[in-house]
Image (cartoon, rainbow, N blue to C red; front, side, top):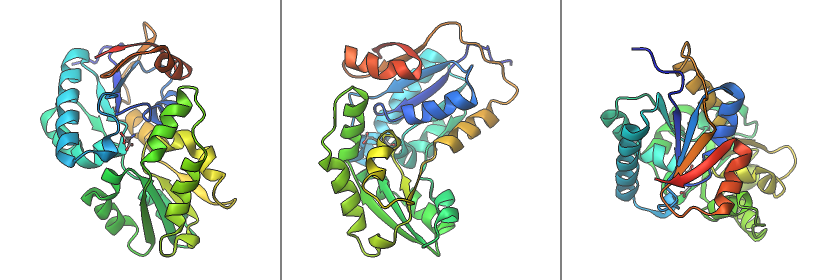
Length: 264
Ligand code: DGL
């Protein structure tokens, strides 16, 4: 059955982090209609248990899939993907693209063999990350560091506030203080919120340290899975959120081409 040209791609995150993926998607598929969905009532996922995250993500994506009938769902959240991707794929009959830490490309880039990985507390403890490390970085050192404060800092920045500079310093200093941390030459931003504050993080590291995230790879994957499909946006893209809607949220979304936001 042919997919209607107006059928959306649903991008899902706990908050505004998925906008880093949306930016990459816009460059690759500028005509694709998008629904940006954020579980803002559940933010931050990184401090929740696996069971709670899995239940929220599976429940919400099931309901959103029924309501919006998307052609594809992208879980634009490392925490949700590393915990619930397999489960969501088992229950929904729509292609699901996940966002997982970019350990493979980082392993190809590092010269010192030491990679830093910044993520949420829930992401860095996942078996999914152990498996990526075993598969792609067995001969490297992967230094995992939880930086939960960066989620709030990215949310604040996008809402037009100035995040406390100490947050960036603490995240980088904490990672570098771990064994071999001084050798890090490549940092994986393993949370979709973190590329939104990459400049602030880079200012805390030596020049030449590379930051890498999965957004371009995800956009390419979505393009490949939708190859041959037609796209037509017949109204401005919309966002739906599970929490409160205010004007700061609408202002944060507008630069990403989102013309309206409502409560899911
Ligand atoms: N953006 C999410 C991620 O990629 C996590 C933010 C949160 O803690 O909710 O992991």
